[in-house]
Each structure stands twice: as C-alpha cells, then as structure tokens.
Amino acid sequence: MRRVFPVIVVLITLSVVGILFIQMSWINNAVKLKKEEFQRSMEAAIKMATDDIHNRFISKQNEIPTNEASRQNLIDNYFTVQRWFKKEEMSDIISNALKQNNIKQPYEYCILNILKYPVLNSDAFKVHLIANSYSSDLSSNNAIMGKETLYIYVYEDKNQVIREMAWMIIASIVFTCIIILAFAITVRTLFNQRNLSEIKSDFINNMTHELKTPLATISLAIDALTNEKVIHDTEKIKLYSGMIKEENKRMNKQVEKILQAARLEKEEIKLNLVKIDAHQMITKVAENLALQIQEKSGTLTLKLRASEPIIEADEVHFSNIIFNLLDNAMKYAKDAPVIEVETLSTGNNTMSIRIKDNGIGMDKETQSRIFEKFYRAHTGNIHNVKGFGLGLSYVKAIVDAHEGKIKVESTPGKGSTFTVSLPTRHFQ
Ligand code: ADP
Image 1 (cartoon, rainbow, N blue to C red):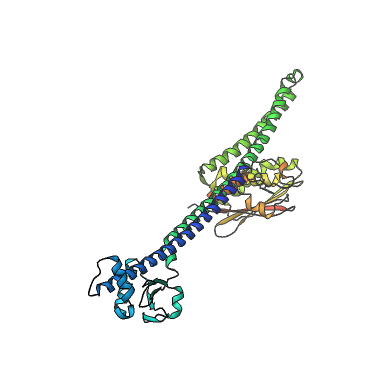
Image 2 (cartoon, rainbow, N blue to C red; image 1 turned 30 degrees about the horizontal axis):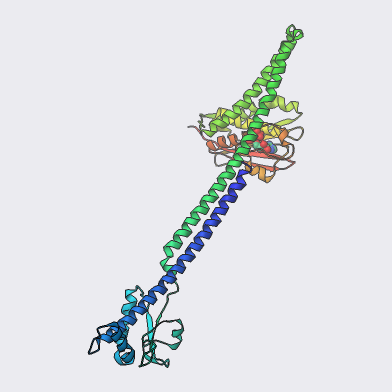
C-alpha cells in the first residue's frame, strides 16, 4: 500500500495532464480546421462569382458562342467589367456566391484594372483592405481589353470560430473539471484508507498487547496453582485465584470497551433515560476508583456544588463517561495524580461537570483529535500507557446522545480539564 499509493498518484496525475494536453491540441486543431474550411469556402465563393460574371457577360452577347474556344475568345477580346456590369448586379453576384458557400459575414468588393485603378467597387471599400482580400483574375493574360482582378474582403469575426466551438470548449472544460474532481476524491479516499489501515494496525497492536498481559498473568497463576507446594496452601490458593479473578476483570473491562465502540459503530445507542442524581453517581464512581488512586499516592477531590444535580440520563452510560474521564486522569498522570471533580449549575438548565488533572496534558493538535475513534497521541512516553483510543470517542457519543457538550482545555506538562455540560430536565 505504501509503495502503490505514490505510484497511483503519479499515474493519475500523468493521465490528467495527458488528457488536458490532448484536449488542448485537439481544440487547437479544430480551430485550425475551421479556419481552413473558411478559406476553402472563400476560394469556392470567389470562383463561383468569377464564373457567374463570365456567364452573365456571355449571355449579354448577341451571339452566344457554341464552344469553349470561341467563348474564351469572346472573354479575352471583349470582356470588361467597366463596360458590362453595374454596381447592383455585381453586388448581387458576389452576395449570391458568398451565400451559396455559407459565408454570412458582411463583405466589401473591388475590381481593379491592370493599372490598379478601381473600375467598380462597393461603397465602403478602402484600398488598404486589398492586402487581406481574396482575389481572382477576371480575364486571362491574353486579354486585349486589359486584365481585371476581383477582390473580396470579408469582415472576419475573430470570435466566430470560438463561438462556433463554444459547446465543445465548455464540454471539455466541464469534463476536465469532473476528472480533476474525481481525481481529488480518489486521492482523498486513498489517504483516508491509508490512515484507516494505520489506525487499524495500531488498534490490533494495542489490543493484542492489552489482552496478552492478563493472559500471561493468568497462565502463570494457573501454573502456580498446580504446583505441589501450593495445592495444600490455602493462603496461596486464595492469592492466585484472586489474581486470576483480577486479571479476568481487567480483560472483561477491555472487551467491554471494544464492545462499546462496536455498538457505537452500529449507532446502537439506546438511552434508558431516568431521573438520576449526578452527585450520587459521581461519588459512587469515585469510590470505586479510590483504591487505585491511593495505590498511586494520588488524591481525588470532589467539589459537588451544583444546586440542581438531578439530570435525566442513562445510568450505565453516565457512570461510564465519568469512569472513562477519571480513568484517563489517572492513566495520563505524571507521577501522583491530583484529580478534582467539580460540578456547577450553569444556568439555562445546564449542569457542568469539570474533571481536572495534573497529568501530562496535550498539545492543541492532540486536543482537536482526542474525540476521534482510535486516536491516541503519538508523542513522548504516552505509549507506555495502554489503551485503544476508544474511551473519549465513546464519551463524546454518549454526551451528544444526551444533547450535552464536552470540551477540553489542556497545557502540555501541566494537566487537562474536561468539561461535560448536560441539560438538567425536570420531571413533573
Ligand atoms: P485511550 O486512553 O484508550 O488511548 P481515549 O479515547 O480515552 O483512549 O483517549 C485518547 C487520547 O487522548 C489518549 O491516547 C491520550 O493521548 C489523550 N488523553 C485522554 N485523556 C487525557 C488526559 N486526561 N491527559 C492527557 N491526555 C489525555
């Protein structure tokens, strides 16, 4: 996965750049083709106009020539625009030829004689337009009456080609955007997947570690129990079976934590809301932990000052969240944990529970991520502390389910304070 990921990113980037490049050159080609097509139409139109002029000249003669040679002869000897054509007719011929060739832009025309002197021209024709005009000789080089040349200038609309291709350009921009968007989504998904797989392997490592220790202790205790010397010593039997029980309890706790998370995954939080006295519950959880805190020479102080401690909550989940927060305050202590639990009625029918410790604290980045499932801070010696990174995500989910709020304030090296605010509801 680690090596495949950059390869995929490079391949997709290359193909997106390639597609962009191909599209650009494709559009460029299309613009060129359109221009060539216009040129061809103009050449056909001017040829059509020339033929029409000659045909009309022939039809104006008293004697219509019967073969090509005498027809050419007639043109060479007698054809001049000046003599045989008027402005209106010429405009007619040119308009018609342009229209037949699908050229709809406005135009100017001019016919110059051999001395480059205009013999007939449209009203707005200017000499400088000749440089950009399409031209056709009206008489052959043997013309007795002098050579005349027809010039047609078409006001080219520079944006015409772009406009004609607008849908093509818009469609390719839209599709390119879609490809880039899909690419971005794919890369993001890949990143997420990678993070997820890292999280997963972290979790499996943690879990194995967490379960291996009690299993090893149990195995050692069982070995001891089967020992000849121990079998007859009731004191020792009590000691070892007590150890097995303790370790069993610890494993149960771990499994329960994983199950809690699995339940949350399936969004199976079913709250059994009852009226409970938060102070009573907090005191009960604190009493359960008192022994462990004493073992670490720590203190746990309760400042239960909320004037309205009665809340509507799920008894089991509520004591779990208090337990998880106190457990963390103990787990992430530097040396002897000094923990303080304070409750306050904060108006608006809300009760806050603040759990303050003097532990290792967290930096801002950690604070913003601790409520994510499986997140564990990866700094310092925190990894010596065991855990799955599930406790706080569970706490957050339960607080949310109770329509409460949880926040954390922390200073690395000094300690952390978690504040849970829960609505107090009153029963009639
Ligand atoms: P776990 O404790 O199993 O790792 P949690 O979800 O309870 O999982 O906590 C997530 C992370 O938040 C911990 O790994 C730790 O880095 C940090 N954390 C939680 N509580 C505290 C605390 N009181 N002091 C310092 N860090 C804490």
